Image 1: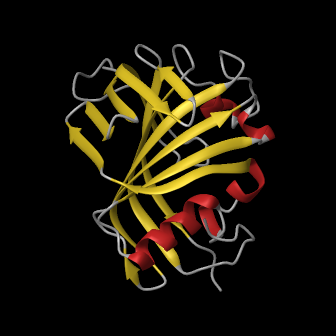
Image 2: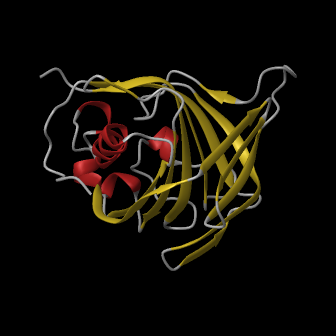
Image 3: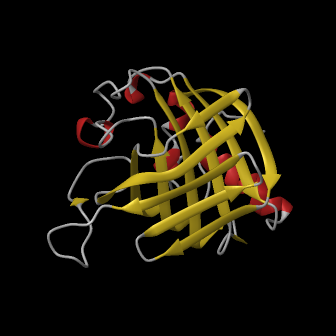
Length: 211
């Protein structure tokens, strides 16, 4: 794992992040900006990230997938997150190192707050991170460690899912509401099942701070 002291780097990622967590109905962190307690008092979650376009210090990141296991003991904004990262096995050494720096917060910019929120990186590894985006469906498979499927919630307009827009949420301003269909985590001593629980999808456009 890279040194987590922040060293601003030249990086950018455009793509999509989707997640499934232990909250019922819809995650209150989105509208409270992490100040409200998760519905279960804690937040257990997996996240899947697809990089459609991106680079880290000149290294191409396009086409790579990342999975995260996230364990937050209370309010999101109060920190003490424990996180494990699964980086696409197709990533070059430079891309792998760059992605770990981005998702640990060490590269600064959009994810720089992770250096304050994440108290422990419980694991970081290369893995076959399979992600499927098919209409209103999102699927992630990381061996037998994370197997998740979510579906977007249908809105009044049948071709438009329920969406929170213009938020100040760290991931992005527009968050699409979803729910877990079948969703299991089995790694690092965590055995979680998020079927029927809160899920969300967000287009991301993140970047590093200028040197």
